[in-house]
Image (cartoon, rainbow over all chains, first blue to last red):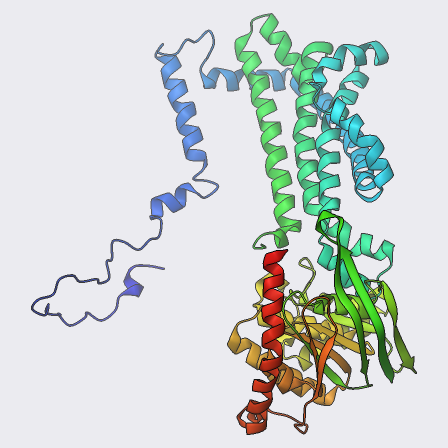
Length: 290
Length: 262
């Protein structure tokens, strides 16, 4: 709304009554609303400003020699290296290999995780048996078992996919279990009172109620699948985006290394925004609840 | 037309220090078809336990509850109007109201129609598409009543349904319930803390004592139907209110001291 349209008739002047100790009256400066500049900074476009500023400072700093160019080459140089890697046909095939590994590893982890999570929550026997197993295996830094996976699966995509699968399994399973276990008991009673069968209670009350929690686990799992694939490719792969990063570090082509890092960051960013978007779309009802 | 005979019901729960907490000791009562019975008593006296027993969600330790007569409604034996509404948060109000019908496989078109009728009856058809979180407590409870009635039970069980809404809204809801009940006669068991509410709504009031609970007093409410809030100025209303409070006061005090010693 424009300022002009909000104008109102001027108020008649008020005289302070003699002996007035304090006056509370409207203060046009203290509206309590954020200023226009602050509001703009919070829009998706405005949010780019701090990022662009940092990149610009980096660019200027390393061009002027204030920043060590050996470790931090100018962003312009990194992006130009990125363009060359794309044009030479090296980057995209490797990127595609990594994306396939991430998707397969993610599915390999998440699908069993949901099955296990739901069974653990609903079947006390399954929980009693699997709980100790998870308690023992969860704290293991999963990357530590990569050599074992290499022994079992040899080299190539398989050990990397399995690594990503194992990493993404745990948060998905734990979140699914807790979501199903935290089913609203009042709603379960309500449904039973209206004659719901056990299957109906599961399908119409417990699972839909657990979906936000399950999806939170899926979001974590997606991020970890990316992490697992990149880490696996660093150490045990001759292809994929992670292996490119590692190789360019080893042959000391720092601008190419940065180029691959830009791609990895973009992948992570896309994953986060996409899953957040899905969450808002489908689980909006969880907002504004007690 | 179903008559409910509550015969020597007892119910307890495992309490602290391995002692068993006897909530209901030996409770007898009869509820006639299409009767509006109010259950009133101090906190913790087992009113909600009674509701669980009548709905079959809890099993009694001793005694029987018998439902006698021919079924005339199409839905479950009982359906509950919950104090905290118990609406499904991810469903629209309409889908909440239709939930009971959905559970027993009524086709979508038909249950939509029934839901709309009941929303209209409670005056909330404008909120059919809204989610529960968007509505005030009063609106949610209207939806809760609509859901219970739409499922077409023999007996409506109401568990302090207006306790969570503000006083003005409660007044409105009581008037609306009187109105709805005069056209849709159902057997109602209505649990409440409020003497005025029980006198305004009920045909009969069962006064429960402190734990372990039994029926301390049974009062027939003499006011004719259809009733309006006007009866609150009737001297008989005032006299009964005082008389009931006399009975309730001792039980309430006993219940409060029981809370401390627990």
